[in-house]
Length: 366
Image (tube, rainbow, N blue to C red; front, side):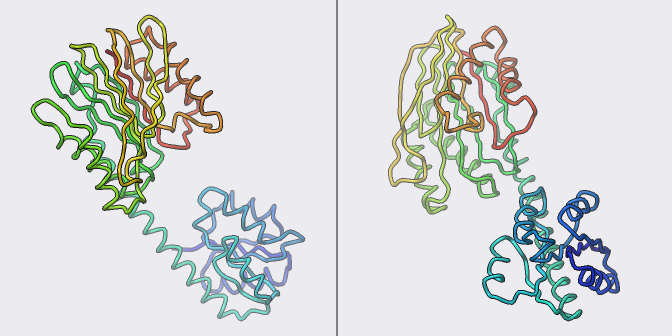
């Protein structure tokens, strides 16, 4: 593998000296005399490492480094500063802005080569580790996805789900549990984080909930107390979740609604009235004890519930307005079947396909 290195310095002699040193050892080298040239080269051919002058043509190399680190994929590219400044403050600043190393002028060719080779090795190790982590996360996510209940498993449950995660091992989670012929439990939860441990957590959640099924009944309070205790024991309060849960009895036409610090469940009634059902329960996994917020309401055939995660609330500064907007969109889809309704809501909320957080929306028809 031939590594591509950019030598970015406004001094022709320094730039050419670095190029000669590196080319002699088989590296592919591009040179940039200013910021514009540097960014053009990066667009044309992505670098494996950058040698960057601290005083870069009248522009602070530290500032350029910060801009580079904010660009896609550049966070994995080592940037070594080249400078005549020996002050400790400059060295500290170099690392603060994301620099990998610091070489002072005049430099020895052997020192440059050793530092470049070392950081290329470290960078490759980090890339390999990240690749392995992604592959493991993907495999775990595929396994977790198989555990999610699909709508065709329980047609009588009359639900549909849209789920999209930004990374393998997404933190959003849902489950549908059949309690009795006419009684189902629907749960949507949001586990903090987007790593492998979160994928394990969602599997644990499903198992703990199922374990509380006894004689066609589910004991929710013991289930939540157990989940709360398990999260604290395993993750030491570093992993926690919010959740909303609906127990729908289609025989008695009664809905029990539970909330643990989760965005409000939405109800679109058949007659046209719609409302958000706020809850004030505790975050699960954060405190020694955990309290549900619980409500019981009467329902009628044709009513619809929508459970979702906070990925559908893009601006938390306008939380109330965002909830009202989501409620209006849900209401406009009443004439569609539940699957089409969920699809239409998502299409209106995610017009360009870009998401900044995991997205989960579950629609349920009474």
